[in-house]
Length: 309
Image (tube, rainbow, N blue to C red; front, side, top):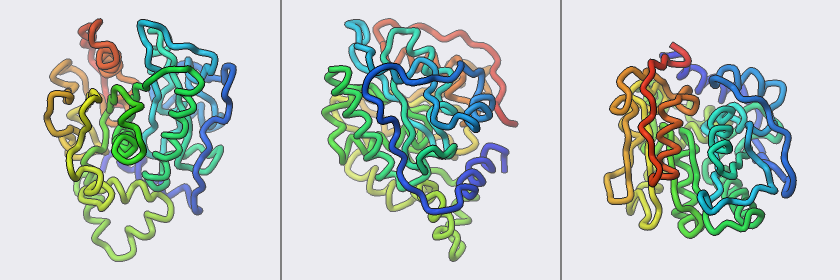
């Protein structure tokens, strides 16, 4: 079992008590305090231990008005156990520098906690959707584009299907999304079969159970079609994903509004893993292309090692 897999499990277990849903950010005007740009998720995690509610750089300027070139604000949706700063302390800055209004919040965890996005996926998504409504109301935009990592790239589909997101979201870009769940190289599937283990895991990370391959939640989410007409879906996945396994489970069923991209088909020298993908320059370039396909550029291919070996 790789270190990233152990982190995914032990971070959930370390939460301990029952969870309350985080409130995200209550601010509706002005710029929120932001942390510095980070080179990878490890340095971002260390910084956010002491600043778990800080916004990622370039994000949460509630006076930002979308431009004609980029009329849709970009909402960043966190992966399981990750807070907004930890997940997005590089990509948020690049998006803001590219001219986007960027927003990120913390949901699905105890308010002010380092660990977020661990509560029931539906409840986390309801809070995320309310945050999206606030973004639309404050910016005056007609629709959002959403970029999500792991659970954050999957749970937006619940918003689209059940919470009215189909009329509010234009693009969904998933970075290693858990669209069809994970077996954690068979470990999670094995644990789920041991009496008492799913219930114990559910007390600290219900989202972990709900992202297991074949879970009731994912079965319901994927039934009747995985996508909705009128929304553009992009999945960016790495062959070296060590959390969403098999890595192909991230991809959505092919369709005219679906683009599934394997990172190594763009850059064979890129060894980015699950945790590193939101900081990976090739993946970041592909996100920018997905948000603005009319001005797409081929990302430079440079060797990128995994965050954790």
